[in-house]
Length: 250
Image 1: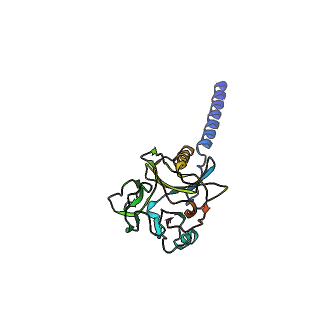
Image 2 (image 1 turned 120 degrees about the vertical axis):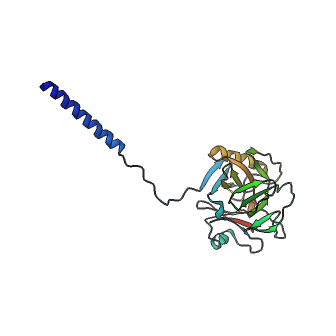
Image 3 (image 1 turned 90 degrees about the horizontal axis):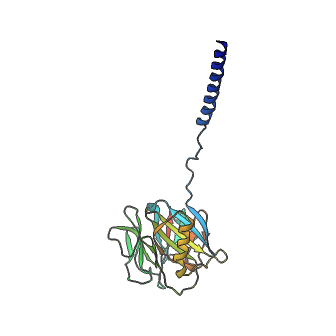
């Protein structure tokens, strides 16, 4: 009888120790998260000889298109005046300080669409804050729209761009299949106003997709070179010549 009681006592102690250990494991406090911590919106990636500065717009309804054809604010001045979290340059403009092709800001059209082999696409944002990059002007109401080009990615396919232009800093705007909007600036870290040629752009953009988990459905080239600028929480790239328009993320 004493042996049986002894065995039961040992078993009971073993079970008690097991449940104490298990309880400690199960009741381990969860990893704490800092409430209100900002999401990482920008990242940088080495792409061959170039650097790619990538910025994600989390809410396209907070994106505004600022015409700067006449006022000629610097990028830094525009960022401060409009209280932008992030600011990048927009599309192209002519020597007469007019937008080349379609330009709509805050539901107001400043210029109409032009058929152009180089500026062959439109970035637009509609009333539902849906960003799109298309060959034709969408028929629904557009809050913001800018004609630019050339198109670099269309329906997930990398396009071939034939161009004999010089190397320069390039700004690309792209949209994913989930309607996420990205701005990507390509530049030479040893010479900030230099970067890929237009012909190289589709290839380096593909490298960005391979080096990240971002897959672009459509992408188009915006203004570049000395008239390009990008100010994000992690990147400051100023312009050397006047910028015709800005995208401002609040």
